[in-house]
Structure formats: C-alpha cells, structure tokens
Image 1: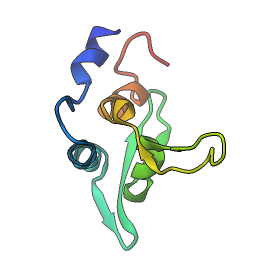
Image 2: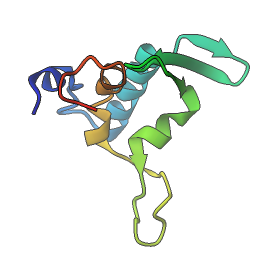
Image 3: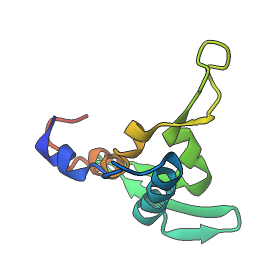
Image 4: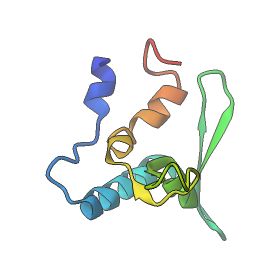
Length: 103
C-alpha cells in the first residue's frame, strides 16, 4: 500500500460498528462539509485539473454503505462498510491530486 495513503487511514480498530459509523460520519462532515444550506451541509472540493466535486451531507450512506444482500437487493445501501470508512480521508487527497501514483 502507498505509504501516504496508509498514513491517512482512519483507525477504527476496536470500535463497534455504531462507534465506527459515528466517527466516520464526523470525519466526513469535518473534512468535506463547509456550508450549511436549507437541505443540509455541502462542500465543494477541486480536482487536480480544476473541476468541482460537490459533497452532500445526505450522501454519506451512498459512499460508506453497501447492500447486505447483493444477490437479491444489489442496489440497497443498508450495511455499513468499515473498510470503506477507514479510507474516508483518502477521498479529498486523491481527487485533489495530492497522492502520487493514483488516478
């Protein structure tokens, strides 16, 4: 694993799923939300080539949940994915082009 990415992993070891979920959510909001709207918090980050990426508070589940039953409900987002959650800090760094060797 890229050492820079490894250093950015959120340490969720020893936490219950509920605790990991709450910590990940707080990290997501802290890193990517910077403006309150009438529909919740949003944040805009720039990609390495100047494009805008908009983060929405209510899209947290889309990023960090998956289907508990992929064969019968493949598009459901009802199971927290702790391995995805640990990478919450990667998102902004990768899209901004700060991690060499990533696209």
